[in-house]
Each structure stands twice: as C-alpha cells, then as structure tokens.
Image (cartoon, rainbow, N blue to C red; front, side):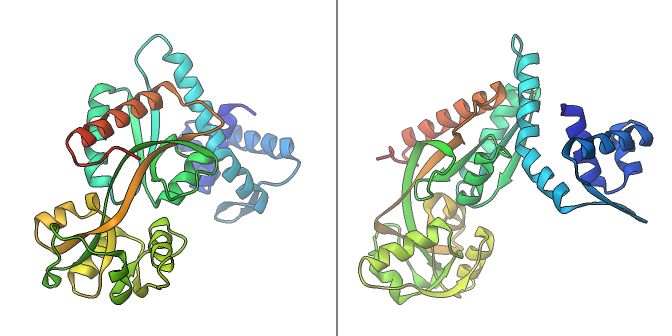
Length: 304
C-alpha cells in the first residue's frame, strides 16, 4: 500500500462521497473508485457501504482508518525528511499540550518556531495529559507536554521542570500566595475537579487518602476555563498548577494559596519505538530550551 492510496482512503472517509473526495484530491472519480476497489481487494473485505447520499465506512473501514492515522503521518514525515535532508526542515509538527501550561508555553513556543522554520506547519492539540500521551504513543502526535503522574505507556519522557500546585478559590475566600495550606484542608472544602482517571484528580485523592480523608467533590468539569469560571462564581474550590491561574490571579478574578509539598512535574513525551522527523526534533529542542528559560526565570523549579 503506497502513500497516495492511503491519502485517497482518508479523503473518502472525510468527504463521505466519491465525487467530493475526487474533487478535493484533483483526480477523476473513476480513478478514485478503482483505488478504493483495489484497497478493498488488498484487505479482502468491504471498507465502505454505498448508499444514495454517498458512502460510509464499514466496521472494517473504521478499524483501518484508526490504524492508519499514525502510519500515514510517519510516512509523510519520512518523505519530508528525505526531501529536506540537505535543506531546512519542512512538513508538519504535531504537538500536544494540556490546558494549564498552554498560556505559559504554547503561544511563545509556536511563534518562535514558525519564525525560525517558515516551511514547517504546526498542528496543536489541547487535551488532558493522559490523552496526549496516548496520541503520541499511537503516532497521531509527534510530541506532547504531559506530567509525571501519568504512566508513560508507549512513550519516553524527559522532565522539563516542576511548579507549585495551588488551592484556588473565589476572591472572597481571601487565599494568599504568601501563606501555604495543608492538603488536609481540601477535605473540608467543596471541590471542583476533573473526572477520573485524570491524573490531577487521582493525585488529590491519593494525597487525601494517605491521611484517611476523602475529597468533597461538588462539581466535575474537564475544561480549565469552565473550572475557573465556576470557582470565580463562588461555587467551590479547585487545585491547579500555578501557570494555569497566573492571569486570573493578576486580574484578581480568584485567590490562591500554595499547597504544602504538592508540586507537578511537567514532562516532554515523545515516541518510544520510532524516531522523530527533523522538524519535530527542532521543535523538541526549542521546547527544552524554553523550559530551561522558565527555570532560570524562577517560574519553574529544577525537576527533582
């Protein structure tokens, strides 16, 4: 199976009609139809169901699409690297970052990278650390920022830096960054936390469990803006890395206190069983350098 046949298959999946896919690919519809028939012959099973409005993938087609996503990206990366072996990087870098460090890292990192490597496009995904780890492992992403509390299944990881975890409450709670609180205090507060098995939720539960305590979960929410909006509205408290609430604290929308002996270590996750392309390696180097700058600026601490 060559790269063009995979791209044809992806186009049919995306457009759901042969005519629209052929138009997007700039090939004739009969040519595309023959390619899909050949692909079905390769696998010995129908990959599409034909109906009056177009086509839909069969269960086998869905499985093939899922399995080929990472493979197709690796083929394109290899092609780009061979082409760019003696010139500047080109192609695509697929990067993932959790919501909390987004404001601190994502915009300046991508801006600097795009200025340095104008022939490379960047695709960014914002998900939880665990989801990003899995996307790196299966080849959908080249690299991602994740955290030490997520098991590193299918990826290798290096520590970037660590930072303080904060108890975040509404303004009227009058928490202070100059006064630490014990993790025990969380058991007596109405908490707004992510759903399980998010690593932050599990870490809070584990910290309280060691003291024979349980969290009082009032609201579950999986997006950072929603969590902080709910806190700001006075509906409860949450626990977040300091980089995730720096702007809110500056604008006095919330109050916060450091939690004693509670830190998060940010990691750079990359594939364990395959090498990165040239463009992704340059992106990786730039991210590592930015992390060192954050440590020098005292925004992060050296990883333990």
